[in-house]
Length: 226
Image (cartoon, rainbow, N blue to C red):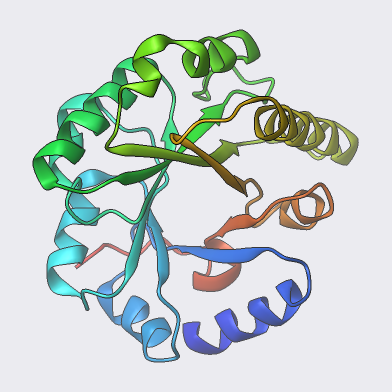
């Protein structure tokens, strides 16, 4: 599979939209990631810590690794010194742990707050009240080794495009409210990560700055990571 060419074609679709691509490389072998890297592409997303660590150790060190899956607090320490962006911060406790590990790694770790916008209860994320509660907590300002770069959300897995659009539009409204109403060194609201292979076009129309694309680039087959 010519992943390099697939990415170039996808980036043409994004040209002029203000949105950039994260290639979801979960379960994919290093050879396919290298194929993309050799074409100049560097942003890859993984959803499991073990796979992310193994790939980081084996592949070029200037790759920008995005942690896009649910993150357990006891796993943060394994990626704190190299992760480029954590997309799925869904609790104050997790954010505190990321800050703690950021102190140890002597770096500020960029994060996105994950908001639950889908109808499925199985998806993770903060609700609206929890989102603003987190930002307004006094301890939020005391976390000097994290920076919130924006929000992330996953729409309902449905064929109803209007529902998907409504959910993305809601997330964009929360993004705008945070950006307009809060001033803090901990907040640098620039990124809105929403949209995957099945709904990225709607996400772009509703203001996404990052889309997370896997099958449209790497194909449907699940490879075993090596």
